[in-house]
Amino acid sequence: MNQVRHMLAICIALCAVSEFPATSLSAEEIPATPNVLMIAVDDLSDYVSILQNHPGIKTPNFDRLAKRSVNFTRAYCAAPICNPSRVAIMTGLAPHHTGVYQLGDRLSRSKPALAAIALEENFKRHGYNTYLTGKYYHANEDHWLPKARLDAAWTQRLAPFSNHEPKHGPNRIIGGGILSIGPASIGVESMPDTAIVNNTRAWLSQKHDKPFLIVHGINKPHLSFVVPQSFFDLYPLESLVLPETPHDDFDDIPESVKQTFLKRGDRKKFAQIRKTKNGWKEVMQAYLASISFCDWVLGEILDALDASPYADNTIVVLWSDHGYHIGEKEWLHKRALWTQTTRVPFLISVPGMDTAGENCAAPVSLLDIYPTLCELCHLDQAVPQLLAGHSVTPLLKNPSQDWPHVAVTSHGEGNAATIDARYHYIQYADGSEELYDHQTDPREYNNLAHQPDLNSVIKRLAESIPKSWIPENTGLRKRTTESQSDSEE
Image (cartoon, rainbow, N blue to C red; front, top):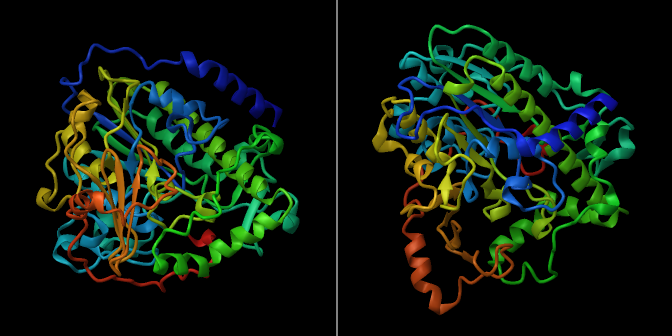
């Protein structure tokens, strides 16, 4: 364990000077057949150093990747829950086109869903080898996408992983036995995410006769928040900063929304944790430790790429499927349309790009990944008229240029949000609304939806709310209910 502490300390100290190998390429001279390494992270919010939303967070490898990337600082998921978000990313189709809204849903028999071609299949059709490991779809089971497509696209199955219970047993389980936190009883070398890294390292060390797409899913920081002790040591309880939770924060949100959240088990769980001495700080510590473990895993992946023959010809894309509340709005979960649940880390690195290391504040969506990779890799866009996103290649060339699009995210059938350069608008299925001005209120404490002088803003943003919704398709598995454990997600 001391070795892990030493490695992490060295990484933090040296990341400031770690640079991507120089090439002579410009952004306009992307190779005709670049490789792609896509890194998908599970339940990672904007608590990373590159997004500056939590003081004291230690994520040096996110900083390292950002130096070779454009860092999209206002990127939003397609849905704030794993399955619909991941299906949207990998098909390029929004949830209201596929009927995938919840954990147990599969693609519907709607025309858009039937016409969809999964990202990895599209790469395979264009002559790429595809390697997929870890969590990329929600459960990586045959019924999440039609079986024939999976068999045609997959070359590797999910590396086994499980959530390890805390070292000290039940006394470290918080919130009525639902939330497991604490140091793992195993070392970093035995963590499931480490085994998954070994798959990617092996693929990168091989000689490939074709360009490749590697999709690598990192499991942490998903629950349980259980990682080796060395990562907990980075965050002493006494130094932790907790989010502000104004007592009147819920006073101005729609009554129907208020009642829904007040009744949900995750809000009650958080209330119980707050009553426990240091309970909230312990949860925060465990989540931050899990993020730093995720960062360590990312460093291992980048090391493998940089040591391979493919470092100069591989596009790297990193995203998280959605955000996460650790007490914001007195909420300990995802499944909401506020910024803390929908804003995510999103980085794209193209070898030789002139804009490496720059930030882009345009409101973009993870739905933009599919068309962007098609353009960067010179692939035909599968059914382009159905893709919900827009290629961000213009922003890779000039991160500060005007971006005419809004980001759209949804949760469940009929509930959606649109985000532009300044405002975040939410419209629920019952017609109730929220509006937040990120210029004056980035934490979203004040709902402005009923201010008459902002009616034109609401009208403009509401135009991007989906007008029709494919009925939910629950597929082969009983839909997860709110009362079930988050560990099932």
